[in-house]
Figure 1 (spheres, rainbow, N blue to C red):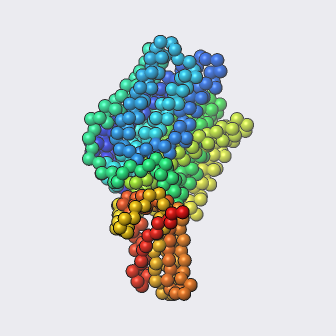
Figure 2 (cartoon, rainbow, N blue to C red; figure 1 turned 180 degrees about the horizontal axis):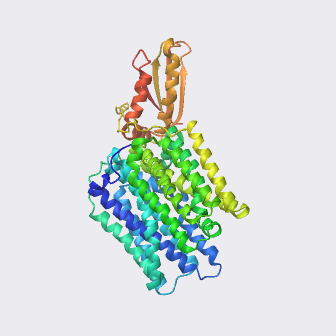
Figure 3 (cartoon, rainbow, N blue to C red; figure 1 turned 45 degrees about the vertical axis):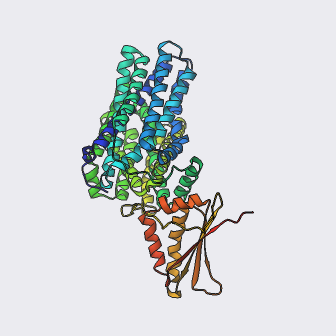
Length: 523
């Protein structure tokens, strides 16, 4: 990880513009949530309706996060952000107008909230992918920390502004300012002309992009490990977020102001952790950091409910906030550095789905435990689960992706016989190696890496066979759905990392590997 200052990415004008636009938009989103909840608080069944605001706002994070990733990898990301925020502006304006003329109903408000939440989550992979495009790799951890700090600042500032506006103008003023925040994002994106790396090749068809992204995540050992470790960290952590208001009132005897103080402690810790992130990364690896942060959070959850002292709760929540942000920011940065550009949006969208899905699942699970056994038992179970999750790092650590070279690399263009025009036929590629017996075990072991490389970049089937008449000859084959899909392998989807795998395998062959292409015969 980089040891540069957390503020280092701010020297880039393009990143500053993007960060400010995202901050203003996030503040507006938090304002809208508060405004919607306040609008419904005097309705019949207010408790259910207010809870549904959170449900319809966060449900798109899990349901439509993948859509955002596909769009971010398929279309121009800057234009995509402009279109989505124009949509948000139109929806916000309609919400404001209907509220102002007293034509807003609870069902309609929840529908508008769902639309706003969906567009916001669809835009997130495009934003994160753009950060990777404009920020040097060495500064990605700092950029991820600043983005995480953005969320905490918005969470603190947005509800405060909304509260002041509701007291003076009602929820109409909140919805109007939220609309202006989305419009501000559009203006910034229109004025922003960054020098971005050119997109390679034609945009991938939507269905093909969905399938290719799913295949990449399924066959990437590193991505799967990062996602699994994210879930193991976030699920027990969610108990602290979900049950903190209950602990504040039932265990610490605090009112709304006291609960706000506890949230402020978490926010101050998160901001402090973000600022100290480069120094922390210089001292600790991600695995060491995850263990320490997990133990800090476990201790904080247990202390908050077992020692009913408000001042002590404030004290322990500051390092808890720091622990959460440094782990999440580093996981995000590791994933951004590892993902190749052609699938980065889809990979980051899966990360967001796991992140928010784990947060929602954990909140529900520990909420049910708290409802039946009490908040003390629920948070103590969460603390123990967090500590046990940290213990599993010794057996299943975060992968070290710092040395993975994701620079684009291309195979030579495959040749076709004159007059042959492939359409949608499947393509089979064979590669023949000649391997002496003393190198056979290493060769076969290396081909497992090759298998994953072929499958993650587009192959739907793979196999390795030995020639029965010439045992030193091995033939690898893999099948791709179409010639166009195979051309994407050649032109867009390979990186230096896959080339290094090929070089290691080919080094065991005493003759130059022979590759041949076959088209599926027409029936």
